Each structure stands twice: as C-alpha cells, then as structure tokens.
Image 1 (cartoon, helix red, strand yellow):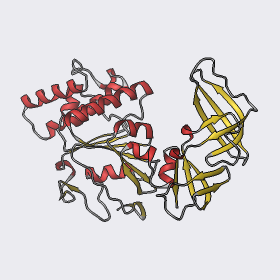
Image 2 (cartoon, one colour):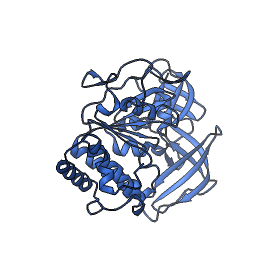
Image 3 (cartoon, one colour):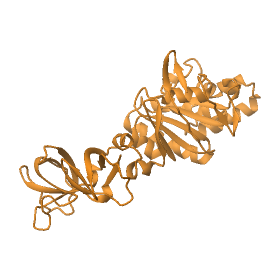
Image 4 (cartoon, one colour):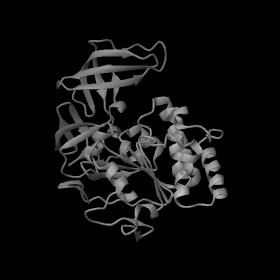
Length: 342
C-alpha cells in the first residue's frame, strides 16, 4: 500500500517479477504507476506491505544501496558536464577507480550508440541523444533493477520507435530486470514480457501482452485494450443484447451480464438467404460512412438497435467493390472475437 497524505494511491497491490524480466506498468494517469517505481527505488516508503529482492526485504536499505537505476521522462543531465562526465557521475559518487570508470563509461556509450560523443555538452545533443545519455548513465552502474518512467514521452514518434528498439535490445542482451511505466498500450505490448494493468490503484490484470488482446480477465481490462462492451442477459446458450444474439461458449460462467467484442474481428457481409436477421452472431445494419484506405476500407455502421460500430476490412483485390453509404449490410461477429463476463 502507498499513501500521499490521507489519499491512498495503491490498494492491495502485489506483483512478482522474475529476474531478467521486462515488465510494463500500464494504466491511465494517476493510477499509481510512478508511485510503484518510487517505492522500488526507495524514494517513497510504503504505508504497509513489503518490497523484496531475491526474497530479501529491501525496505531497511537506503535508496543509494539498493542497486536500482531510474530513467525519468526528462533526461535531467547536468548542463555544465560533458556526456562522459554525466555518464560517469554515479560511478564518481561510488568512488570507482578512474581506469574502471573510463572503461565502463566507454562501454555504456557504445551500448547506446554514442561513441565519439564523450566531449559534447547536453546543449549539443538532440532530444533522443540526451535520453540515450540518461540511459547510459543508468546502465553504467550495472543495476540489479532498471526503472524507466515514460522515458520516451517527450520524443517524436520516429525517435520513440528507435529508443523502444534500443532499450528492448539492450535489456534482452544484458538481462537486467526492468520495470517500464507507460500509458500507451501498443508500446507496452511491443516491449514487455508481461504487462501489469493498473486501474484506480489496483492491479486489474497481469500477464503476457497477447492475453489482453485474446483473453482479458475483466470487463475493465477488456475495455482498456479496445474491446467493445455490450450489456445483455443470458438465455440458455445465447446472450441477448440490443445488437443481436450471441452464442455463449460452454465453459462460460453461469452469471453473465456483459459481452466484450473486438471491433477489428468484425466483418461486413452482403445480406443474403444464408445470413438472416436474427441469426446468432450476426447483426443487420446500414453503412453511415466510408473511408477508402486503398488496401483497406473503414466503415461506420448503424445497427438496427441504434448502436454504431466502426469496422475496418481488408480489400483482397483492387476490383473488390466497397459497400457504399446507405448500403444494407450484416455484420458477422465470430465467437472467437467475443468474451463474456458476470
């Protein structure tokens, strides 16, 4: 648990991270992600519970002796020091011998692809280069745990992509246990071995990225990862909703009141004798708008219930005809694209 004054930020939070694992803490602003990093780093003390490294409590251990390095959203480099001096700062505080410091600084800069930048000052670097210096400064201390607090948020998309690839490659090579904070689900899925989804100070789900896209455990986890929630009620093996009837898998729990569906798994069909209105997992509607993307088409379909679903569908060939605005269509929502929750 963790509090800020009388406000409780984390509640009933427990996480077991494997050595050498890359874990993303994912969630909206204010859900407690950065608080967790500060607790691990020793910058905050928990109101309750424990923090263990290799099954030994580190709560009595001061921050500078925990073997933790942290990279923040902003590089926070010393403007009057050179790149090499910035990277060496932590080693200097540990009174590391000069020869070893020089060797480790050189190796850290090589890892982040900044050889030859040793004598430059921060104001001579780009934003991406500054963040790489910050990363080298963290790696040079050979930490037990590396903490990354949205380190790419100030970079443009091209630089973000490059830094994501670099950090992931370094982590896999060095096998440093890494905790990465982000609010971007695509970024978390691209980088992490496992994702810890935090909502309102609680751990909503912890698992591999594909679990969130294929098998979310709660409606909130499903919704955060782009599933569409549809309320309804169970009628035997069918789930009755305002947009249609859907087949419930045999293993689903008895009490069900909401269905989640993945919009990208929905396909548009031409109405026909084999696709009758009312057939399970099919929903009739009308195309309200169309965006032709060349190889794909994005439709906005108004269902008979008044619900609107956006569907993006691939055009298999150039001569494929698009469903025009006003066209009567039927949406097919396959059973594999649905999940049911009580």
